[in-house]
Image (cartoon, rainbow, N blue to C red):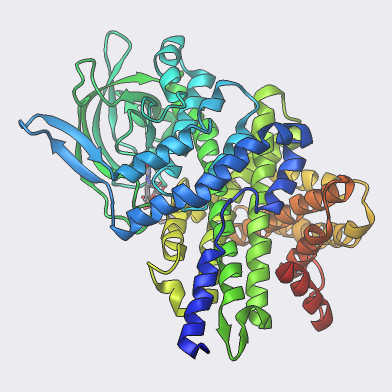
Length: 575
Ligand SMILES: Cc1cc2nc3c(=O)[nH]c(=O)nc-3n(C[C@H](O)[C@H](O)[C@H](O)COP(=O)(O)OP(=O)(O)OC[C@H]3O[C@@H](n4cnc5c(N)ncnc54)[C@H](O)[C@@H]3O)c2cc1C
């Protein structure tokens, strides 16, 4: 029997569904190339089986469990009292939420912080996981990682021995979840306006009182909080970092009451609350007068890397969804993947998702390295400047790329039950707001350029990489990048220096920040393309093309003519 048009259309959709990813790791050649460079072949070899196993779980069990939660709108609920009227301040979740947590934590994603030098591998698990969006657990991972690292770096021996074993416990059922509460109702960007007070007690603890306005992971077992000790100075200088256990020794809520859970646009499976504190017992993490500095340098830096990895994961999923759908969907008698405009969308999705992973893993490698050795001056400046810049660019691109993928889906892109994209879109916006809005990161960038001259290290780092001896296929791109550095980026920084004191300087800084970060991505892609060329077991063909497309698309190389564009789109979208 011949198919009618509707039957054919539906059959193609069924084929698209049947071909959905079965393993986020094994199907990701680009990821393996990045890891071959950043982890080295030996280390990658040791972790490959773990990544493969979790890549399969993430694409199957976790994906299904998350979709099911979405289908029944299984968002967390607040249960303030138990059956006999005692205050418990608990958050309740759908059973799938806990099932996902068990799968994720068993990978060692957090417990591997027990020994240094594992962070790049840990963030691979986060990357694979976040291809399902936030799924309720991406934010808790970032928060716990930050708390673990600040405790390891500056926490007292007592705090370490009391809390680290449970924070590092790979068993989800007994693990301690963590959160970080900085934002208050009067503002999140202006943390220096924090009014929550920490009164010192005689035993070295503090009693915390006041209101926190955005408290994600409201179910956490330990809260990391900023608060101002009595008589401490105004501004961020006067803020301490405190650890607040959820429960008292008697098992009761530790001086806090959850006002309500936020009804959010995205990250809806994770509970964000408004919380009132009234004498919560707290312990300072490190010297109280260094609290905010440590939070920025350790906790926020960590969260910003997790944020960027999440964006890269989301972009990767948007890309694979768009490729699969475009291949199956037909219009005007052919697969839509044959239309040049769709091909360009697909190519952009591939290139931008690879660029996000590229810059982020380059930075994660420095974060890991800094735990065991001293970074050079250039590396230190590069890392300091690029982490917030990368957070901003990857978050912006995350939303843009999910949007691009939705466009490939046409009207079906807007339908909740049709694909993962609407949820990814909502989660992407939250990743833009978290851990520093774009404007605030711009202001920090401007300040760091003026105060620490971080741009000098950043430009030097780019120059050093570009000028490294080149293998033939990347020579053209390296040449274009060298001239873009001299003729576009460096003069723009001179302009910024000249106008640094002008009230309009942030306008210049924001555009320059974005452009420079895109440039850094081109440089990290160049590193990858060269590495693929050198490593006999890898092929550089696609990576070299990806780099060439990226450079011309962002104006660092002359735009492709029609013939060259057709060749590029064929390599990037038909292989
Ligand atoms: C779902 C969700 C969960 C969150 N979870 C947490 C959490 O667990 N813990 C926590 O501490 N916070 C959390 N936040 C808060 C988040 O970190 C803040 O929203 C963010 O820091 C911005 O603060 P704000 O919302 O008060 O915006 P505001 O600070 O009021 O900013 C409003 C606008 O003004 C701009 N602006 C502010 N200062 C400047 C400046 N100097 N120059 C130019 N523009 C400026 C901002 O960029 C923004 O566009 C969460 C937010 C969301 C959406």
